[in-house]
Length: 315
Image (cartoon, rainbow, N blue to C red; front, side, top):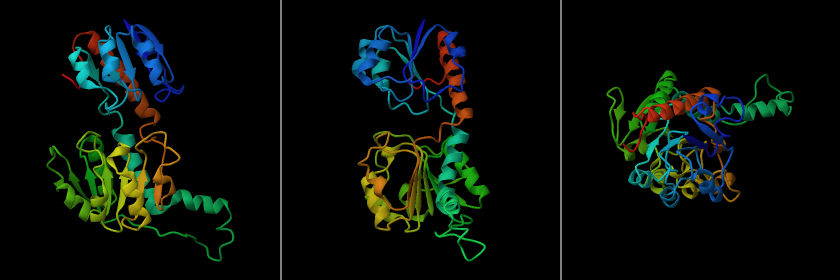
């Protein structure tokens, strides 16, 4: 049994132990793999693990030994699942590793916008407080979240956890989900959510239906005081439309941990936009969350070898 990890560095930059995976068979771990290196590295593999390295139809069709693709993440848009299914290849993911870390980070983005902690810390170290005539100092508006409305788009595990934290802050929470399943939440349609929310948080997957879900029209429908948070997938938002909305005061601010093309490119319009806070796709990356990915992936592999796959997305 040969296992190949195509892009192991982001999961394990050195603080995790691969030995539990290496014990399962001949294991080759690459920190990174460019697209022109993929086939050479997996052509004789039985099991391939990938996070963001794409496994497209043409590649999958050429891999005759491949039996399992296990994605080192929840989102699996980097894998052509249909092509894998046609070849009888099982595709698994890790569905719930990031519930606590990702929801925590969504709130961190929101609190940074509302409280400007990072900015004011810099002002202190730059001497602005020392030179101030008063005992307190702030140079940007501070926003209280109590009794404001958070609208969550995608009310799965992460969305529900974000909602719990928002409620603890005294917020009213509403949600939109294509498949509503919880009874203790007020579900509304998407247009109503955009219109009535003070804070809008995206916790949905990226697919043909959700691509540019937040577009020019929906941004115009939002409150001028609205804050948009996205740490799911960058292409859920039309970035040109968002840049225009922020620069023209259509909405107040945005906190983003993801963009449409990563790493972010120099020509991304959001880099030159007012009231836009961007972090480098890091909300999933706590030690605890990454350890869950590794442990769950080992379970995916051992269960597959035993003949009863778990976390399979193409069953």
